[in-house]
Amino acid sequence: MKKNFSIYYTSDTHGHIFPTNYATGKSEASGLLNISDKIQKDGNTLVLDGGDSLQGTPFISYYLNHRKRWHFHPVALAFRAMGLDYFTLGNHDFNFGYQVLKEYLNAMEAVCLCANVEDLKGELRIQKEAVHTLENGLRIGLTGVVTDFVNVWEHESNLEGLRITDPLEAAKTACSHLKSLCDLRICIYHGGFEKDLETGILLSESKENVACRLAEETDFDLLLTGHQHLAVESTVISKTFAVQPPANAGQFLCITGEADAAAADFSSRFLDAGENTPPEPYNTLSPLEQEVQAWLDQPIGRLENPVAPEEKLKSALYGSRLADLFNQVQLEATGADFSCTSLGNEPAGLNSSVTMRDVTAAYLFSNTLTVLEVTEEVLRSCLERCAAYFELKDGRPCVSEAFLKPKIEHYNYDFYAGLSYTFDLRRPVGSRVVHLARLDGSPLGGKKYRLCLSNYRATGTGGYTSLRDCPVLWKGMEEIPELIRKYIKKHSPVPLVQNRDMKVLF
Image (cartoon, rainbow, N blue to C red):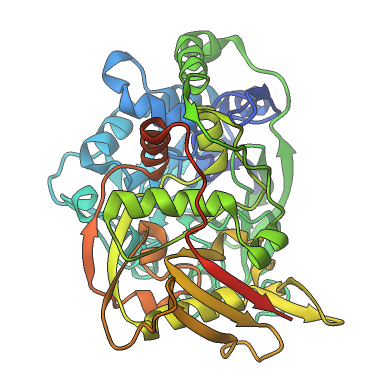
């Protein structure tokens, strides 16, 4: 006889614990605390999470930089309030090195399942798999895996003592081990779908996301995905039921069904985090939250002129004053010949009087800097990828569907400094860069140059594959928002420079 079960699932919550929008300082219906108020748990319920919990908000960044002063771990407290049972790690959970990861895992009451993470020091509380028996007797086998692109993105020092192996092979092994031990098998995968879920068309040759292969090549009944920040309420791939919640703890998934050793039935729905915040651990965490808010509102310097929020297409066509500023920060920090940066999906600007809140709202990413050795051929290839951001409709430029589906990716359009370049959108994609030179107009020639960019882009992520094999000349450890803070403080009042000559023809 089939037995009922319920599963609550979060992923990619990215440090969103309080119902707070840190860019505006106002409340919003989100956060792990509010989610905890919505979870109704009994003996036939599991609460699971898919990783990326230690990065993403000023709150969690501030805590990690001052964590020795606090006797608690805010993420662990929030997950405890939710009744979390099992979780896996996300790529961003490795951003701060072995010790921070160890402290996090030690603070968690839930069990960490990450079958493709090998702990070479033997100090981390990580399991490959687990079997959980519900109150009604249903045996649920669980494992977790994380995208092995952690090896591509992460600074080597942060992976000291760790080995990240192929998630697909680790999942296959765990699935086989669990087969005779349980009635229902679940894989929590911090990775996403490499195919269009409607057409089945392969979206990327990269192995960053392999959820479809995982479903096709294993026998898991339920695949809980993440990483892509897509909202996938339900899909079925090769008889495997799969889901993915959106990022930042505004919504989560409730999956219900019934199962026995022969078959399982599933249904799922999104639930909103809601507006109710329980008194605990809210009261315990409030002093930390108040300290974060005070830190965010401290003035750090001034700009000679404010930067109004810039509409995405317009700034891509005519240049961005905000990107000019960020590139200038990067050039000064590295002494590179050229710089490139990207902006978030939403229009952003800076007031004349700048606070840390303004900086974190304008530069959304916890990236560090990398300097690569590049040639004119590499730069031209990268700029062709930028030029693919546009398409012409009735002779007018608009944003290409390739940057809007399956998710919006304005952040994969890069702005360059130190270069003079022209795109001709009337030409086919791949041959649109019709002029490329140094800022003074001199040709690049056969020389080698230093390009500074984020550690994220330096791996070739976002379609910039020519960067992957470029020699790495230098890697920084400070996050770019902190570099921006220091630059504004040093140069206040900061004159805005135009450090590029860019034209788009259409």
